[in-house]
Structure formats: C-alpha cells, structure tokens
Image (cartoon, rainbow, N blue to C red; front, side, top):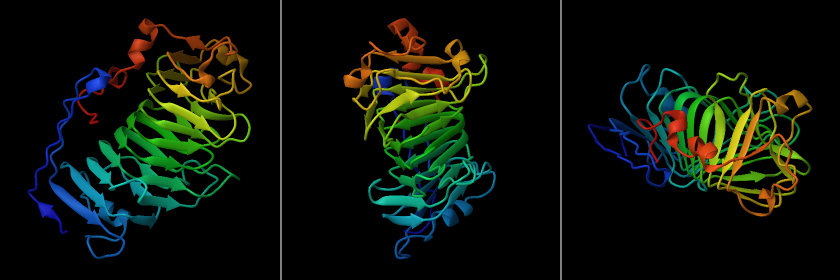
Length: 314
C-alpha cells in the first residue's frame, strides 16, 4: 500500500478502569508501510521509513510494519515527533540487534522524539549475558508502548527520562532490567526475571527529593526463572511502587535490596499496595520498604502522576 495523503483516522480513547479520562486524539495525515520483502510497502527498512518523516514534523505519522524479523538498530530523533510505529502482532513483528557494553550505544531501538507510540512489536537485544545490552532506550518527553515485548538480559529497558506509559507489555531480563529516571506507569505488564540468583527488576535513579520521577506498576504480574528482588536504588531517592500486582515465588522474601548503600534506607521510597501471590508476603520484607494504605497508594494508581490526561492513549 502506498503513502496515503488526506487519510483521517481519529482515535479517541477512554481511560476506563484507570479512573481517568484521556482526551488525546490522533489524526493520521500520512501512513507509511514497511515490508522487508519489498512487496507491500514503501520501504524495506524501518529506519528508512523514520528518515522519510520530515524534520520538525507537526502531523501524526503512522508507520505500519508488516510481519518479519527486522535486523536493524533504530533511532527516532528528537525532531521527528508524533510517530506511531506499529506491527500487527508482537510475536511476528520483531526488531532485533546484537550489541552490548554501553547503555547509551547498545539499544536496539532509541526514542528521543516526543509523542511516540510503539505497538505490537518485539524489541530485543540478543547480545547475551556477558555485559549490559539495552533493547529499548526511551528519552522522550511523552512516549507510549502497547502490547510490546521488550527482551534482553542486563539493562533491558532504559527508561531514561520523560513521561511514559507501558500498557500490556512483556518485559524480560535478569539485572536492573527496568532502569532510569523517567516518570512511568506500567499497567497490566508481565515482568519476567531470568536471573539465576538475586537479580533486580528495577533500578530507578531519582536523585533528589524535588524530582517528580518514579516507576509505578499497577495490576502487573511478576514471574521468574529463580529468584529476584523488586528493585535497588540507582539513585539515592529511588522511587518504585507496586500496586495490585501478582508476585510469584520468584520474588525474594526481603523484596528489596539497598545495593550496599544503607543511607538510602532514609531516602528511597519503595512501596507495595494490595499485592498478592506467594512473593507478595511482607513478613520478611526489609524494614525500610512500605506497606501502603489506600490514601498513600492512590496518587500512584492513575495517570495523574504523569499529568497524562491529554496525551496518553490506551
């Protein structure tokens, strides 16, 4: 299918169970199709389709990726906002690369542009277990990911900065596999630890009391190969909250680790609210983690934490 001009597709979404209404709309001015076979699309590489979007773009662009395994490192620059990158099914639309050693240079997909949407994609880094290997780096003021699979081993998702929403995503790794200093809500995501021994799911990097950042997990699921902790503080004011989340026995009884920094016991904010499953028992949790009341947890249950009423689509 060629480039379609003047095609209008309006997506108006209600937040529903998140108890917040989203007023975001997106009217597609251009649709680009990527097909690695060269039979159906405008481009055979995803990066070529992104490069075709004008600099300082002001109109929403929909890049449809046909099923296939796309072996390429992809970069969405800051001056190309309003891009939606969408497969049809994450199991059949795979973006993959093999690079490690540097969290900023290794990512398979890097997003700097605002108002980015990723849907129905597998984003993976196959470098392995010997070094840091980021699958997805998000340094975007506003970004959304729906039904994506994000897979690596160490430092899978660099959720670096900005406000982000992850809905119904599968995120897999062993060591600090969700890390960074964004303000992000993870809704109904499956987090799978492949750690053989004491891996950490999160390493949040909030550095001061004034920063409005943190990782917030609502109605998620945690499974694992062996044992892991929920998080450890990359920054002294690290903030992570798990709410209404199923925790398998993969979660170690202590729940959290201080990374050898006992001073963070006073400054880190690690909370749990109405979590359940064998790994959610708080009998042996570290004393500096919190069992939250509904009043304490309520700010972390809705889109308000990211001031997202007018930009998140779910």
